[in-house]
Image (cartoon, rainbow, N blue to C red; front, side, top):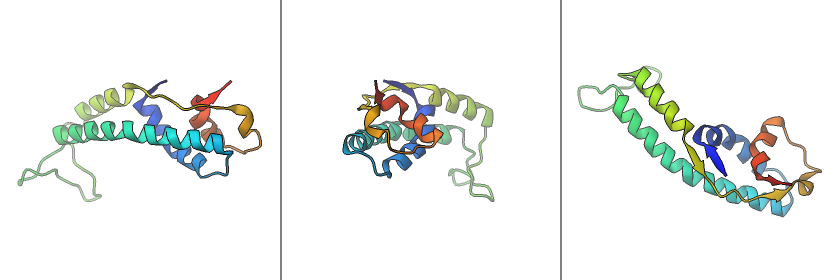
Length: 124
């Protein structure tokens, strides 16, 4: 299944919340496998994001990234950074999603955000 980095990042927190629920073992297993696959993909995303920070980050006199009073990295070219970051977020990745049937989770309560996070894992 193709998912954008943006969607992966947006849904990961809700997916982790779902994984902490008491679920039938088939659903729990599928979600755990999918979280592992997603986290592997996010390692690549984080490395590329770090490259962008190094490329666009303001450097201090020692050649290290400059950090403001709030602990945030100062950007020399915020517009360029945001453009490239959005391009990185929009890249789609093919992830082999482990699926489960909807009927095995019928008795579990989910928030709308949690449903959105697991909808790609449900087979009909």
